[in-house]
Image 1 (cartoon, rainbow, N blue to C red):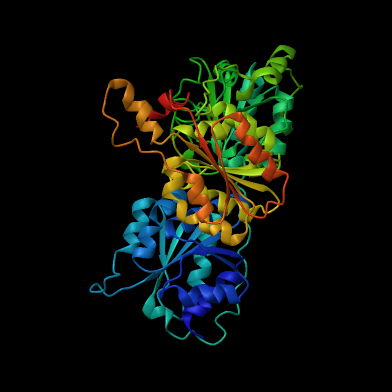
Image 2 (image 1 turned 45 degrees about the vertical axis):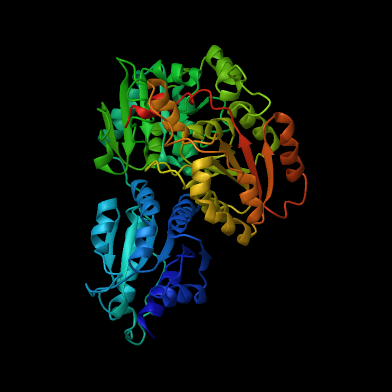
Length: 546
């Protein structure tokens, strides 16, 4: 057996059941071996799309997912998606063929590329060690929650592996949760005991049902309000004390209540500039606590008064065991009534700027929230528009929202929705894109149709890179480089086999309702011509970080 086949079979045996990619000569045999061993391969139309599909699938499924690419340009095409995954600590395994001959057109320093974007480079160095090194890469991705680039030299792929090389291959053991120390548990319990108005902010490290249940129980005992970072949106969806998302997307009421907290606890959450609005959501006298199973993450973005190294679920349960008498805390009847009435953005009054030719993004999003089935999974691209689908379209839980924004690249949203959809085939996939990102990633419309996904693609179309228009326009800068003639994106989608609806007014949304109530035999694209008279509410906040 050649090493390429042995590596593919070892990956499948190690539990890597889903692989995305674009196949070339260098990864042909490897990919086919994975398929023969039982892994599912999804061919994308571009390696960048494949990388983001794999990233999203790993996030939603909670499993190590693989990306298979050709040597050299196959890897460089995928780099933006790999960077997003690496920044997000996604357990992604990138399988890249590699040439080692410097005179080859395909030769680049792939190991240096991996390090440059924050991925962990590893390599299969010999046929004898191929299976063991492959399994080590899977373990590293899973246990360290890292994006790993496994380089597969062409010469090694073609060598014969020793007889019985696959005998010891097995799925890696589960990651062992980090136990918090007694001293850290005591310090956090003391801070909660002293707090009168605590707020919990849960992040990526709390996105599990067990962590959610533990946090909700502790919050109920301590009278804490609940919020999430954007990537964990939906975690507390059904809880009446949920403020939804903290940070730039927060509603006015949510921001007011978080600013009023005397204790903010970040659970598996970085408490970075986005989640804390550059620190403005932290009151002058507020105590800040942070829990993370990576000690280096504590205080990385702001000073914390109480830092706990530990697993979120274990820490919350340990702290609850030491807690005293239950208290009302921040959960007063007045606060509860306010949250029920106006914590959602759709309940905040606004002046509808819709006209005959363009629809207000808020009006569009509220209507779509009512039309689309509640059991949905949403992937969002980046741009001026992104706050509207992120905050006006509800999600049923933390698996209903996939937010690939750690690198803030546009063009990833459609591929995000595809990867998430394959991880949760029981839900309606919704891709929310701007016109720039939609056209940048349009090749993957073919992938949606080819896979038969009953997806709704919503394009917030303002014929521009809206973030730049609204950021630079008020200062009188020329905008010719970021504004474009109208594009009939609905016609583009029909060319890929989609049903499509152009929306200029609320009445045009009947086409969406008809699709939802019909057979859904083809995916639907909604080309929404949205108003462009002002920037999104969060835009000014976002540009503070540039």
